Length: 539
Image 1 (cartoon, rainbow, N blue to C red):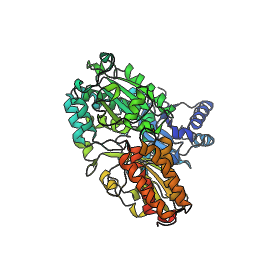
Image 2: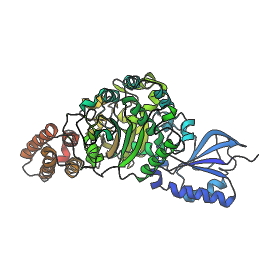
Image 3: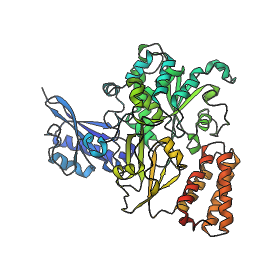
C-alpha cells in the first residue's frame, strides 16, 4: 500500500494572501511536482499570527496513517520553498518534531503565544478546510445544531441567556434577551406591508459589515470557518421561529464572499440548510447580501434599510428591530462573532461558556492587535486579561522600539487610553468606568510620536465623512468640530474654542440618533483629557 500524501496547510486568509501565501502555495505545488513528491495541499484559515505569514504547517504521518501532529514553518516565502524540500520537510518528517530548518517553529499549539489563549470561537480556524462539511463535522461541527433540533425554541433561547453571551459588535447587549424578544414578538406587532404573506414572519440578520479600524475577526472567521456562522444562524432561526437569514457582508471582503457562498452551498447539499434541516422537517434559508460600502450601515437600523434596497440611514427607535425590523418583521440582528459563539454554547452547555470570563463579561473575546506592535494578529482570550498584557505579552511592544503612548480600543469611536490606564482589565463594565468601550475588540497602538490633536481632528473628520446625514448634531456637529479643532491647533481664541468644543461634544452625544454621532466625542474628549500638551495645553 502506498503511503498517503503528506498534508500541507497554507492559509487562504486575506491577510496571509496579502503577505504572499498564494505565491508560497503555488511554489509548494510546483516544487513537489518537479521532485515527484506527493503532497496534499490544504488551504485553511489563518492561526492569527500575522507576523509569521505565510505560515506552512506539515502534518506528520507514518505509512498511510496520519498522526494529526503539525509542525509549522514561517514566514515561508516562495523563494524559501526549495530549501524546505532540501531539508526533507516533506519526505522524512519525525512525528511531532518535523525536519530541521531555520524557519521551523514547532507545533503551533505549543508556541507560548498560542497556548495561553482560550480558543473557543476560533478553535477550528487554521485547522480545518473551511469549505469541507466532512472536515467541519469531524471537528465538532453541527453538534450544537443537532441538539437545537431536539429542543423547544424557548429552551434554546434560555440556554443562550444562561451562557451570559453578549453582543460582540459594540453595544454588548445580552444576545439571549434580544432573541427572547423576537421569539415572543406577535405578528400583530408588525406593520402592514404589501403582500404580507409573501414574506417570512421573522428574520435572522448577521451584521458582517465590519468597518471599524483595526478590526478583522469577522473576516477571519468567515474566511476560516464559515460553516460555524452558518450553523449559528440556523440555531438562531430555530430559537425564534425565523425561516430566512441574511448575511449583510462588507463589500470590500471578496474572499469572505466566496467562502460564504461556497460554505452555504455545501451546507444546502449536505442537508444542513433548506426545507428539511438534518432530516427534522424544520426550515431555514440563508443567503449573502453585499453591503453598500458605507460605515453607517454597520448600525443595525441603517443596515436594515440598506438590506431592503433603500439608502442606508438610521431609523428612529422605538420601535426596535426585534419588534419591527426587516420588512417590518421581528428581526434578530447579531454580529458574526455573536452568532458564531452559539454552536459551542448549544453543544457544551451554558455553564461551560459562562465559566470563562469575569463579572458580567462571560466567555471569550477575539481581540485584534493592530497598529505599532511587533506581533499583530488575533488572539482569543477569556475576559479578564489586562490591556498591558495584550500590548506587551502578546503584541510584543511597539514595532518602532519607542514607548507606547496611546491605545484606541473599540474602533474609530473608541476613547484613546494613555499608558496610565494600560492595566485596565478587558471587561465591559471596567472599560465603561473609565469612559471607554471594548466594542468589536480592535486594539490599535500608537508610539510616542503620535500627534493626539491630529487624532482628535480625524475623529470629527471621520464622522463628517461617514454620517448618513439624517440628524443635525452628527451631520453639522462633526463638520463644525473639525473647524473648531483646527482653530485650537492654530492658537486662535483658544479659551473660547475649547468651551465651544465641549458644548459641541455635549450636543452630539445627547442629540444624535445613533452611536456614530453619539460616540464621536469620546476619542476627542479622551485625547484632550490625557494628552493636553498636544493641543498646546488646555486654557
